[in-house]
Image 1 (cartoon, rainbow, N blue to C red):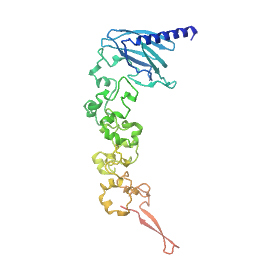
Image 2 (cartoon, rainbow, N blue to C red):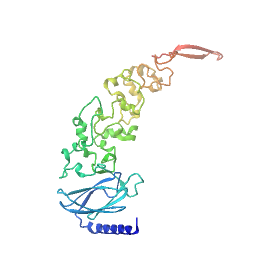
Image 3 (cartoon, helix red, strand yellow):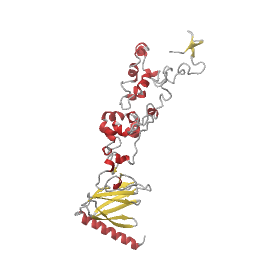
Image 4 (cartoon, helix red, strand yellow):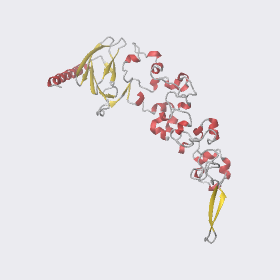
Length: 371
């Protein structure tokens, strides 16, 4: 860059900034977005504002290699917009004295201090007319059809071809896209209006409070298990149960419908949720009991009443409720897991005893079956 060009650029900046301060006080132009000091990751930016219909607005884009001067005319609706192609780094624009500074973060370096990252919609298609008619009304009758023109929502469940528009949750919440999303700019991912877990909290405060005890919540909030819009699976889960649980938990992952414990979980199709509540704040996310033993007792009344009696400290000392039915639900720390599941000799154990004098050891084999 020559000295002469640098001098011309500096002079232009001084003149533009001077005009900005001089005219800002009496300008009829009001910028709507982008926010001042916004940092964006798209090279295309939609700038929009308000002014009297038919107003001709002179504007400048101050770039590293010079100044681009242009004009635009406000529509009859009183709204003007222009798509600007940004260059990496700081971009400055002036609209009839209204100054806005934007940083395009192309990944080549950090975002400078003082800039705040925003997500801009709709990415590289930065024209208001992509979604708005000339009177600024939304195309296709508004939400959700104007959004569904680009954002496809279909059932992910091959056994459920339901149309999302006939789904109760979609119609009650997701259908009005701007309930959760700011469709122009947002500092949150997915253009959410609030922190990513907050939209669910609005309608599900109790489940939201309990879900924080679930490790999955820390990884992805409600969206770790649920599809926010529509999935085609019950409860808008990403997949059916128990598959969704087995994404993180391998307990009972080898069990089938024929040997899943408890049998009532298969009949009710609740599977893991027969004993667990993923939104519970109880230990082990238990569904309806304060402890594992009391949960066991809700079905196994005779065992807990006439079994080990006072000697019973905890059912899980010996049993694993996630084992297959037919294995006595014995914990894997036992050498014998159940009939027909061990190698030769699994049904017997060797017992060694000292005689009364403690001199000799007697050895005998006994049946180890405790069924």
